[in-house]
Amino acid sequence: MNLKNSRPCGDFRTSYFKDMSMFEDKKGFFLTCMGVFILSCSPLFLDSYLISLLIYIGFYAIAALGLNILVGFTGQISVGHAVFFGFGAFASAWLNNSFLIPVFFCIPLAAILTAFIGLLFGIPAARVKGLYLAIATLAAQFIMEDFFSRASWFTGGVDGASAEPLKIFGIFFDSDAKYFFIVLFWVVVSFIIATNILRTRDGRAFLAVRDHYLSAEMMGINLMKYRILSFGISSFFAGLGGALYGHYLNFVSIEEFNIQLSITFLAMIIIGGLGSIRGSMMGAAFMVLLPEIMDWLTRSLAGTSIDSALSLSEAIPFIKEASIGLVIILFLIFEPNGLAYRWGQIRAWFKLYPFSY
Picture 1 (cartoon, rainbow, N blue to C red):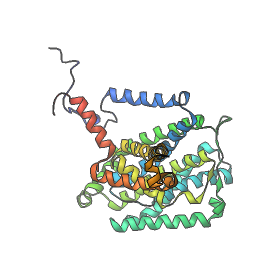
Picture 2 (cartoon, helix red, strand yellow):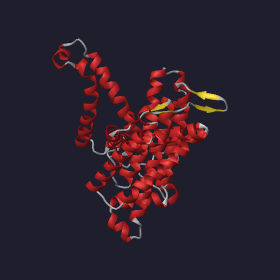
Picture 3 (spheres, one colour):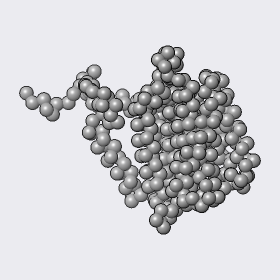
């Protein structure tokens, strides 16, 4: 009997190297590369509007990835993630406008500056947990919002700050089709970095702190060090996503990075799946597409008896905001593990079919 091409029905990893591999097999690596290739070709067959949605999914996914490392992998909580996203946008614009540093270098430098800010806020936040930590990060949200409004040298104050378009070798990436490749590059780099961080000793320490901090401390893991480090890494990715966001819009305003955006980032990782790298991308895509779907649904019902009874056409902004809260509640009740877990279940069913195990 030839077993060479047979399909294994279990997990038979026999070495530490295989256990820590980024892909389960060569097929997973091939499918991932194929997906990136198809995305890189999307400007050829998608219009500017759809490309714009993909760009938004990209830098929101990077920011959500950082929050997932903090919340999903380290077990901390943050309701002030939006201000770190905003700090990255302002920092990149400030570096370019004040020091004339090329935008290509301003983006990672802004992420590093944001990481330092996250480390500073992580020092007091690392000493508390639970509800007290949520209040501490909420305080950080309001402190940074006040800083944005007062530090006109950095943010431009209420007037906002201009962000120059990206230019590489004399080529301006000032259109959706061109800027999409920049966002795709940083998305791939960010997810590779995050995946490799979680494969290191520090990444396993994050999981130990999340699962049982007392046992982790008894094993010699410095709880405060890794809690602060997780805040820094989370802020790094938030700043990176914010810098990409700022240079895409070419303008950064202080009104954009409010508590509602922080709740939206939390919704992304809850819907996508806490403690899942893949879930960060899924949650970001879901939250970007949800308002578009609700807008399409409302316009489809325009002129009908339902529209006349509920005045849907006049309540589109409210419906978009209310749908976010409703979706979070529904996912917490019916799918608390998120879309990534459900996708894993579907893959397992197809892989094991027709066997029940």
